[in-house]
Image (cartoon, rainbow, N blue to C red):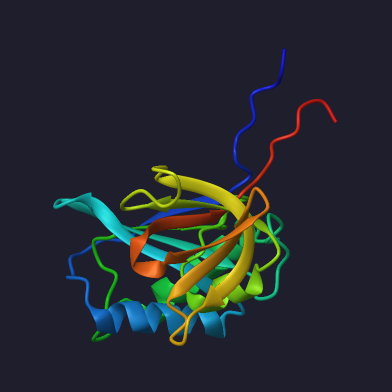
Amino acid sequence: MGKLFTSPTFLLVLWIVGAAPMSGELETEIERLVEESGFELVTLERGGARNRPLLRLRIDRPGSEPGHSGVTADDCALVSRVLHERLDGGAISLENFVLEVSSPGVERPLVRPRDFDRFAGNQIVVRGYRPLVDNRRQVEGLLAGLTGEAGDRLALDVEGERIEIPLDAVAKATLAYRWQEDL
């Protein structure tokens, strides 16, 4: 019988007191501060409830290998501290948000064009808003990169066949990870 595995994502939860609406300005400032701290912002998600809003960040080390970001709990704490110190009390604030900072995990989301270039040659899983290939909404293949004049198509090698998927049809793309049992 195999072992139960959990993602090695490190997670730090920090409660910050007060209240503030989210804005594009806040998101831009968060990305800038994450980059100044030596990391890249992979995703920034908002959620939670009205009385306890959530701000979830996934950070990575620039140039890290697929599935091995090297982001530690200390790194997450550092970024949390930087955001707290630099944003609270100013014109932009994180007041009243639960702030979660974590590594992207082994099934790292691919969000920006640079992600598709950086991880070309790796297996990925693509989930679509509509069927992508042979009436399937989920496809796994080897990432070839972005194509099209505007870089608006995702190229994959799927079972020996090259396919292109319009980026506007992609709901989610992540690195594929094969969990190994009993090494």
